Length: 606
Image (cartoon, rainbow, N blue to C red; front, side):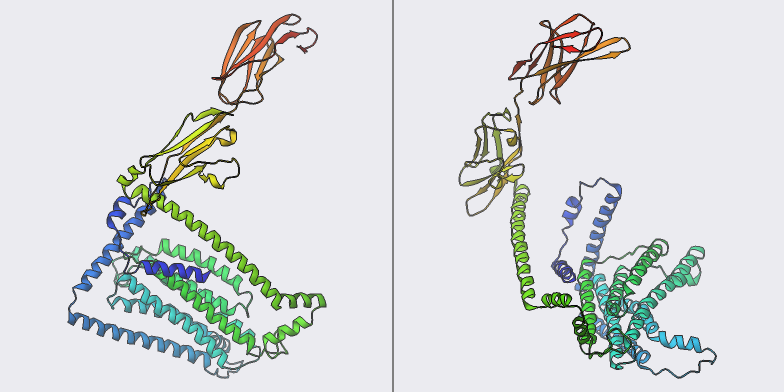
């Protein structure tokens, strides 16, 4: 996943380098997304367009100043850059010397009952972690100030500072690991290494929190309450530097990878630390910092962050591989008694029961590995085929978009219209769809039903012939949206798509049914005559006849069931009821129903 994201970032940084040119007219007149309806999203889009234009103008201004430099100015600039890079090398060398000194120095013997013994012993144990944390806190800001004097563009300044800072962070961690290995095997060296990673991880968190609580927040209070004092003016405005905070996350992840094997609780502490850091950083951004005035292209740093994360992963993997294969386990760990961790693992496997040994040996065998490779080959083949199919679909859609937006004259030449007579028809009717183009020569036709190619459908079965699609007897399955697409057969490939035509297939009404029910209300008995059909497509007009005379009528548009209220008297014949249903092509009658209700019961007789 890291390699994939690094590849995506590299493609973006390559594209957004010197080859990239912002089309200002496109940004101004065509950059707005008209689907945005939320006010907050609209504000973000405004800010994005404005920042792109500001960044483009700053880069153009820098390129103009760079083109106007004279030879003497170039010589002086390169001399300054060489001098500043020598200062950077001096700072890196001094930082590495401090790490070496604090890691390899011999601790003086102090009597346990001597005054200050506890604090001096604590300082000696935490001195490497304190040194590395302070170096990673102070020197990157010095690098940032140095890069501002080198007269690069803002994006180049940020990238140069990130390269120097990331080299400092990863190299300091690598030197600590190297010097720890060089000291040779010690008693319980696994526990010592885990403690060092724990100290390094937690002390970095403590220093950052202390910096915010003891420096950033008091500085903000000083500027709010005494903005005119010299100390407030000297401190300047505080800004939240996103690249450096992302680099801190990369460094913390590398430390976590390095210590997770010897300190298993470190991932849990990492989760707690990230949650706490998130809320502290949120408070700092909203309360202590002001927005950055100058912008840079974040895409150019994306590749770099993923590359440093991958480099840290390789560094920690190499260190763990060295400890697993070469280093001898100590006598106080779970791998005691073996020449290396790998040997102890094989001894532990040999001590397991027979079924467990057979299972592990099968998993580690060459035949199982070959099976996994075959499965991976099948999965990769499927993904490749699927990717090619998706690319073809994307290319087809791109061609449609190009034709619809590139050339209006050619679009009119290949304009398509689907004609259908009629578009509303009943089951069993004949449907004829015709795709008419203004250019009739050397065209290939592709038909779509509900935006799917009809040649790939199994139900309903459709068989187009050139520019026509004929269905002899339609059913309800043929109802839907039809469209066609043409492509020129000439050397210059052009295609065009028609608008969708909605075909509605109606169902014939079945024989209407009639029923009668009564209910007792406050004013006596009320009868309800219900007319319905078991199948059919609305709208339909339902009429109720009593003794051959129409007494009620209703047009049903959503269903084929209608209920008519009728007046009822007990113990007499209330008449013969009959339902009539009409559509534009049908007129059906139900059976007659005699409405008779007994005095002692509410039975219905037919």
